[in-house]
Image 1: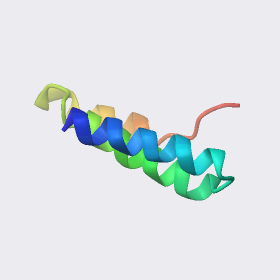
Image 2: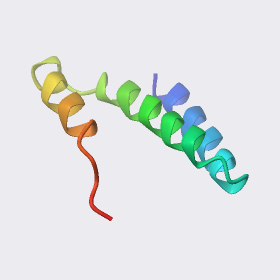
Image 3: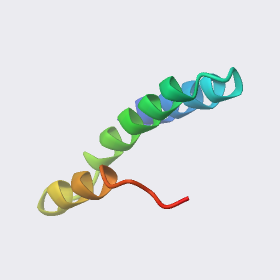
Length: 57
């Protein structure tokens, strides 16, 4: 799971470098959601909710 998240983050980095910011954002979100599964089951829902919040610039 961590390996797949890392691969997705690499793809996001590449997409961002190519100017494809929408795809990069989607790939980073998918990676974050995979990483959320690594969180203790008690905290998973909270972690997933936090990942969906917009970030301040």
